[in-house]
Length: 280
Image: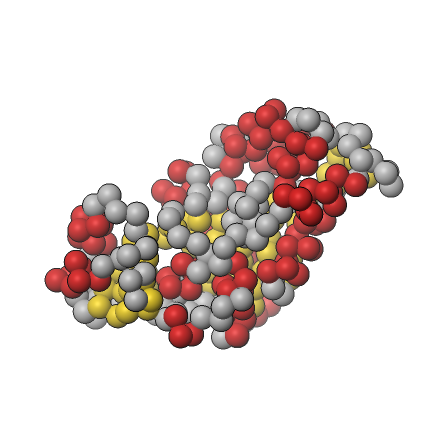
C-alpha cells in the first residue's frame, strides 16, 4: 500500500469507472469513494471534465484532531466587510479591493485598513443588520463541525474578518474557539480604524501553531481550510490543507481542493462514511 488513496466526491460519481485503478471503498453511494491508488493523474484523466473533486490523500493520521477554518466565503456565504460596505453604499469599491487581496495581489493588512477606513461614520447598527440579513452558514458547515467534534476534534474559526461576526458564526456553526479582528467604534459609529495587531496571514499560521502546541498534536493531525491568499500559510502547514471554492492562487498551492461540493466534502476527504456523519 502506497500510504495514499485517491478520494473522489461529486454528484452521481460512478465508482465503476475508476475500478481499474484499485480497490474501491464506498463512503457515500453515488457520491463519494476512495480508490486504493496514489495515481491522481490517472483518476483525473478518467474523470475528464466531470464536476468531481478528486484529491490524493495520505492515509496516516487521516482523521484529523484539529480543524482550523477561515470564515468569510468558507464557513459562511459572504465576505462580511463587503456586505457592511453595501450598507454604506460602497460595495463595488470595497469588494474590488477584497477580491484583489484574496487573490494575493495586495498585502492583506494594508488592504484591510484601507477598506475599514472607507467605512468611517457608518452606524454600528449596520453590523447587526449585516449579520441578520446577509450572513448564512454554508451548506455542510454544521455537519462538518458536529462530526469532527463527535470524534474528539478541537475546532477553531480564525478570520481576517471581525470579532462581531466570528463570535456569532462560531456559536452558530459549533466551533470551540474563534479569533477575529476588532472594528473600532465611538459607541454609535465606526471610527474607520481596526484594532491591532491585525489578524492576517501570519496570525492564522500562528493560531495553527499555537493550537498544535497547546493540544500536544502533530501537524499531520490537523486540517486547515480557506479560500483566500491570507489562508495560504496555514493551509500549507497543516497535515491536510484544503482550498475551498478558492481563488486560483490558493487552489494551485493547497494539498487538496474542493470546487464542486459542500463542506461535508472535508469529512469524505478524511475517510468518513455517511453512517458516521452527524447530520446537523
